[in-house]
Image (cartoon, rainbow, N blue to C red; front, side, top):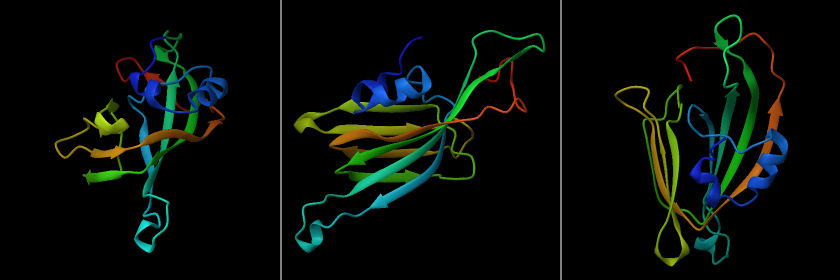
Length: 155
């Protein structure tokens, strides 16, 4: 399985690999929760602003079963923490924040530019910001109940 390039820039990716068996693609994951912490630097402190993003990830098998669908391999909740964020912009958050991609691009001064994009509709989700580091906050595999299987062509 080809690894999503974003994982190369995320500290603690081994936790995800250990829990899920691999580091999944962010394609078709859902952005479920956004938590902004403004830090305390305005009060003379040393804690910079940060973002915590929670994703719902579902991975499907590569082969079609007898029903003509791709069975669900696993479902999981993943929390990523982005430290020392800057220049954050959020557009078109809605009830359907399905990602097309999460891109991480190293830039000058050791920072990273992060872009979350969707392609669901005309007013698709677009999140952009710069950060100093990215780390896995938590990963929790959910029980797969066979009430949903992905039809061919949906992945």
